[in-house]
Image (cartoon, rainbow, N blue to C red; front, side, top):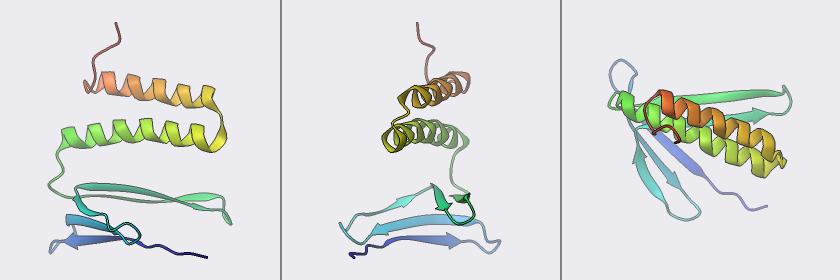
Length: 110
């Protein structure tokens, strides 16, 4: 079995608040810096989702709103690909669109 590592390095200040987040994907050499990361891990034994949500103290509130909106849309796409439940994925996208409109991230559909 082939293995590949994706590493996150979190730089903390003296109060343990993230100041920087960097990542590196071993397989293709990609790397970069980020201001936020949301990682969901499925524990099939306990049937539970484990979460790691981190953002730097430099992350702007408006950027967090946009990051959350875009994450909802990509979650719907992932759900559709993984389950084939396109109708429910569209419900998720519709909710994300309402969220985006209420947060004034996107303009209401005309």
